Image (cartoon, rainbow over all chains, first blue to last red; front, side, top):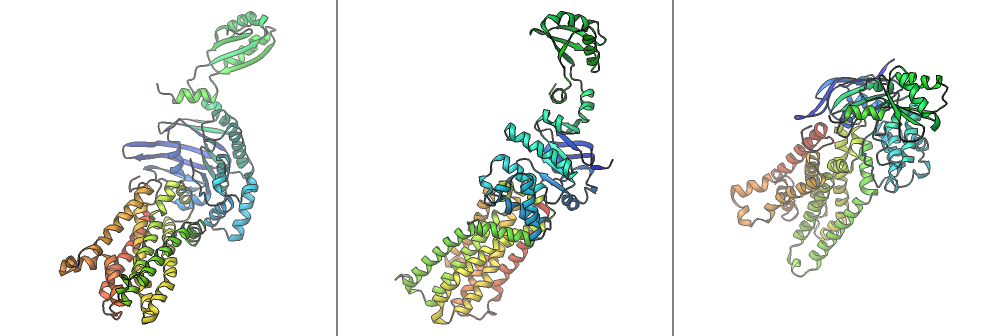
Length: 311
Length: 254
């Protein structure tokens, strides 16, 4: 598979301060790569380097097949929604998009047609002629996404597109991101703090911490490599709880099963991540009806905290 | 570059800022023209001096407006958070800077157009209109290019828009200081050098020689040297700095 973004040992320093160091990763064509990390991890710096806004201090990278030594060629092939992007308050959404379409070389008529299509795509067709100053935060973010698409980019960088949005707005924005990758076939690098949504949206993740790559791969790959503690939880009928504890105690790879305070809830430690299957099998084969099961410590949020929290 | 210029003009003129500044400029010019035409004390001015006074006010304020717009050009975009989107386009930073410089200069063009009827009205009786307007175009354009370029240059490096505007106005005031010196301080080789080296005083001196003293164009051309050199040098410096140093954070590092 072709790499749409390929970084090798990229470093950005501000004097003695390290923005990102030894950043190496690949994003494949058409995938949504989640870029995660706590505040100050270097996500925005990494995106600004890859989008040619900042020059790397060291290292090489290529975006959409263009080497970093050809920044204008990269800019022609990418779309970017910067973190905390500003918008000209006295322009309408239509004027703003038309201007950017013209900056990418569209004719007046072409820019007008494209603007109408993009406003429709991001759900702003009814407000295209309103001043941007009257737009809500969510509408501005959607306008920013439309602006990022004026050049039909092969790679789209979205830096915290859900920042400041309410839960409904966040869900809508992530829906737009998924549609973007699915319908346009664009590679999306999505920087966000919404870990649960990243699990649903992103095919792979890149976790940054203190300017360095802490982990990368699919969510399950990253989770399996993480040193997050593993625990399991089962819910059975209250009268079956003791039997379930006995069954779990006999199962391979299960340690310290006990009641969890609530009727029917049983908690246990796992020696390995794949021991969860054995635990569930032990309860089921003991003839105990299983109401629910949950593996703790394997969610992206658990992995994220394990990898990024200060020791 | 054309797209950037057109957008700058739209923002400046359709956004209302340019119109507001032009209205303020025309009010100032109206008051000045009214006073020099009717006020008893000012009426003692010789007719040519009256035209020269209005012309100099038009040049100075018109160039000031261009400076103000230019000082807001890059640092203003940076502060409003709109610069990053602009830098992400394939348009070169040189073209962005040139577009902003030309947009700022449109304020001078409009200011001069506003001044036309005033100069025509005051100068028509003494056959001064053609000379005054031609002098205004040459001197005013040179000074406007110089000051707008200075504004862009400061705006590229200023860490904030407030610093850019304050510094630009401070430099402008410093350039106008020699016009307030007593005439004795303007005598001698040092005074002469100071007046000639400063593009503002040199330009206004040249305009005064033509309009007030009725000198021929070619006689005092050496006074145009400083405005010419400064406008070319500062325009080149602003464009080079724009091409090389326009970035998200102000200053030269990073």
